Image 1: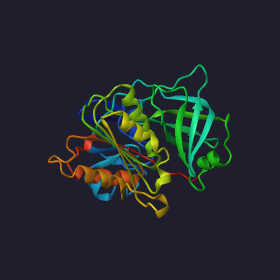
Image 2: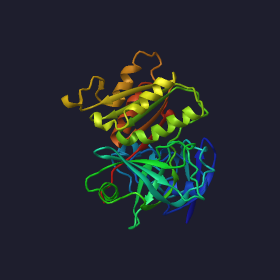
Image 3: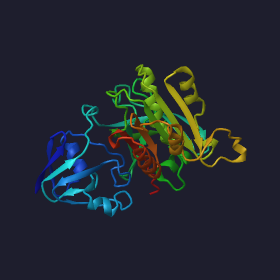
Amino acid sequence: MSYQITLTPSGHTFSAAADEPLLAAADAAGLTVPYGCRNGVCSVCKATLLEGEVDHGESQEWALPAEQRAAGKVLLCCAKPLSDLVLEVREVSADRDIPVKTLPCRVQKMEKVASDVMILHLKLPASERLQFLAGQYVEFLLKDGKRRAFSLANAPHDDELLQVHVRHVPGGQFTGQVFEAMKEKDILRFEGPRGTFFLREDSTKPAILLAGGTGFAPVKAIVEHAIHNRIERPLYVYWGARDRAGLYLPALPSQWAAAHTNIRYVPVLSDATAADAWTGRRGLVHNAVLEDFADRADGLGGFQVYACGSPAMIDAARTAFVARGLPDGEFFADAFTYAVQ
């Protein structure tokens, strides 16, 4: 049995089977709504149920607390329809015409930029190019059928080699392979591009780009895309890490800021040690943003925010920024989780 799903305010409709997650059904209908992890963890695909009933599926309690469910919130990646539905959700259309491909790639170069961070430079077959938007991600297809998602760190104009930033997770199946067994010329397969984390170029609002750890990868792509396209709206880049080594490309964002008056860069360390000899900002990276814009009468009301990092960072930033006047619809996020199986 299938049900009719209506999205508001767009008025778009699509059908979803009773056992089909709403996000998958929307994808199949060519409609794009915000999403990140696809497994009920990051809450990026949260929508409001105005009419009808759903089975919440495997939504995680902390990503969708009971009080939010009672208020009509649903995670589209997990929820399945039990009736016709009306959902309030913001759609994304800029990536609608970009095909998702399954492609092989060769590991052209491995660049270890920190003890636990490897940059992979990937070469596609000569006859292929991957069309994508700066900030999107690809999913590597493992031999056992599992997938691992990594953001593309290069901008679309610079696509001779694709670039991903991989942090070593102890016990991690894919990251262990990267750090312990992978070598140049190895062949990988991936599917992509995916994701709705990209710069909304129809806006002229100043943008705060918030990165935690290797969440810098899609931020790097977005900034380099903006520079290439001569986008002159103000860009405030905040990169947070535990220690100095976590800012694994320290010169690059400083170079952006030095060369472009519309770009400002603020590095922040949460657990700097004496060995770091750190004289810069300390604490949580989203708090640095709050401190820097505390004197604005309208708070963050005139900004957009693009945040990539752990689910905890994303959740804390969203809550704090909305409380400081940021419209919820101007917060764009890409939350990553580490899989060890």
